[in-house]
Image: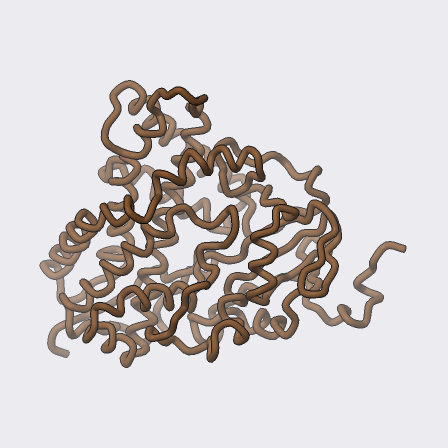
Length: 412
């Protein structure tokens, strides 16, 4: 007999959709409805289209799912955060070059091409450039002060400058791609508009790919476009990879920086501890990544029956891994709802886990450990220019953050 959640007393009271509303209560906490579902690490959940899948909230269970090749990563990038319905074989193919939505062996091929270019050593070599970009943004912010929108003046331009430098994208072209990236991640926008924005981003990167093939420069896109003994990437593949790296590399870090500064400003004890000891920048970055969890959820589909945390997940079931909930699991992080930059927060899942763990995680870490202490050192009197409840939040985006962050410094 087919499983019917409506006749199962253990699941009859579950909510019809995944709770996503983060704007009530503390702006840094997961949705209250999601927190209420975290009493079991794996449970059934009804999605908006009516089908039933699984929600994973426990840290250990989340790691198990993300590391297990029996869970497929194939889904439509532009249709996030809504999981696809049906068995994996019925899912549409991922866009060319979309390494997030591919399984082995296709994913393995792309991953091997990219992994050696995102090593810890190579990312740390960018530190001096990141310091320069950070200082330039702070100089401009100080000259235009004594108030600013921290998102426009600092949180967005720093990672944008960095990812442009890494990929070889002209920073002067940011007007061509920043708006497209915002639409791609806006889940309140119609799917057709997101498709169009994604196509526009691919067209832009595709133009760059052709230019790099004709006249290579010292950057990642040129490196990937260079001929070699192994089968190379097609123009379409390279445009897809470049577009994904460009979008993810600037939006996730920008929102973690903006929301992270907001969190520090409303937790002055934590802010002052970081200002007094810049060596806490590394632990502070890890804790903010855990505490904020701006990119959520991660989606999978079971290729076969798999048991996770004592629950049998059936072949073809949609699986939603909640990074927010896993990063607030008290079994892994004591007092998880408290921001504590002295905490050993390693092991959080903000960069994912397993074969799809974020390639750019070391770059994001370097950006945060450089940018945060530099900001606090430059502006000792940094404070919110509006009450915390008036800070506008990115509630519609699959990458959470602040729309703007009005700040002031100097004498009050």
